[in-house]
Image (cartoon, rainbow, N blue to C red):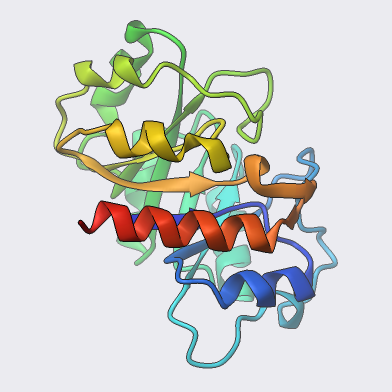
Length: 212
């Protein structure tokens, strides 16, 4: 089960989160987000410790393909997470360039799942998040029962309102395509600053109990 921690931007906090047993770390490249890295952010400030197995994910909202590629090369992103109205062709173009693609979909009702069909086989993962005015990071959960209607082959990450007290509900949730979780605002001291103690405890418990 993959664990991704998203919205990282402060070097010291990045290093501390990198010491945890997570799989992916996300960096927001959308300037309107309070967790966004700035255009002046240096590659060295987002560098992970040597031999760290965590893979870096760039999070974008309706950015041109060329801009996404430039950011991926600069910061070493192996995965592109797309939160806007990017087309299936955009997803496929990035995959053909060698990037893993996660396409995010906001979910509030069953009909929201209809938008997924054109993206099957165009993205490596889907991410199901809470529908809100912005693009993720709302801190609000959606009704996971809606995902019972998802029967596609593409694995998905569960996001939206996950926080330390979400563990019991996560342990009760089951779906054959469920591949991981995306942790963000529910584990923050302030936007972009993660609570290391809360993350460490949650990740340990989640991994231990999901492997039982």
